[in-house]
View 1 (spheres, rainbow, N blue to C red):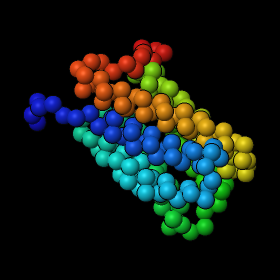
View 2 (view 1 turned 60 degrees about the horizontal axis):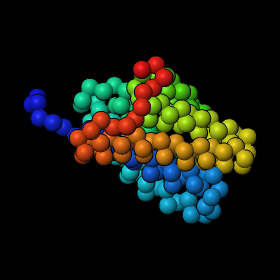
View 3 (view 1 turned 90 degrees about the horizontal axis):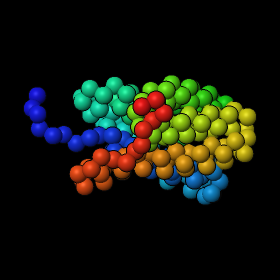
View 4 (view 1 turned 180 degrees about the vertical axis):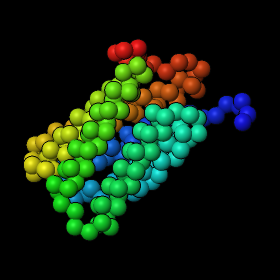
Length: 187
């Protein structure tokens, strides 16, 4: 293996996650009519899904277990969302979707613990994300528009935090500086 500089895959994974999450969250929050929600499908398949899967593989290659696990899992989530929304898996109930969202919330909560010594950008992103998953999951299971809207608004904040974390790295690297991401609580 050579010592040549390689690109950091995290900004790609975070940006794919952020943009796709932002678009879907505007529908979940009720800001845009759900009639246009199909626009997120292409993003889910390619930018939220495929780009994050690629970022995960590149993180694996770099030896970053956290990045690999996070990006590959959320990339797979977006691929699941894409295929489920297309009806590939047949009759999926709201309660079934809610259970999947709660399960991703549990996964994300555990991953959030892994950010306690990372940086404040990742800490906030994962904190907001597990809250988003739990709100959306509960909203689906309880058929609660209020919980779904709350999950959408927290999802928008999650997307902003993820985008900041990823793009601060890109801009800082291009300027030859350290990214302004702050210290996580246990740093």
